[in-house]
Image (cartoon, rainbow, N blue to C red; front, side):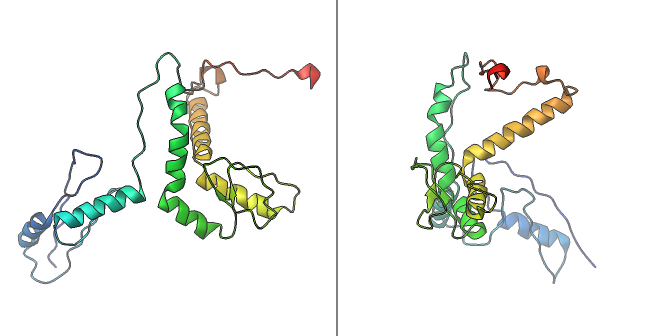
Length: 207
């Protein structure tokens, strides 16, 4: 049985691009000398895909607009200097809005937690989620007792939809990796953005 395997490598100048590989694939089919069979094209990168359609500029523009709506590009900022995090803090709200507006996040939340309050980046008054009329929360809801299943599941949905939860998990993972790397010595752990910041100490005598 005849077969041919080839690996193609591409670089695009921008954060998103389209590469027409029609002629390249046709050349490889001729090179294989296979007259009847299957031609399998597989994108080996998680953020790439292969599709078959007309190479028409208007169609590519529609794809571009659809992808930007599906996964919009996040705002960028320069590296903070002298510990000034004001520019980073100013991006919190637009980044939270961006994350919450992603179609993938919205659809996944509705599929995994149907009927439970969704997270919203706009500030809303603390609500009792046991009230079925409550459909949105902006903070973790209070769990009133061990049987407060609705509040517990709502918290799981907030973990999925609130970007602050993802960030806190990333910081925790990074700190654990730093502890492992430095022999479990916390004095050698450096977490960018959190070090050199004065934190309140616990007054154990007046607890």
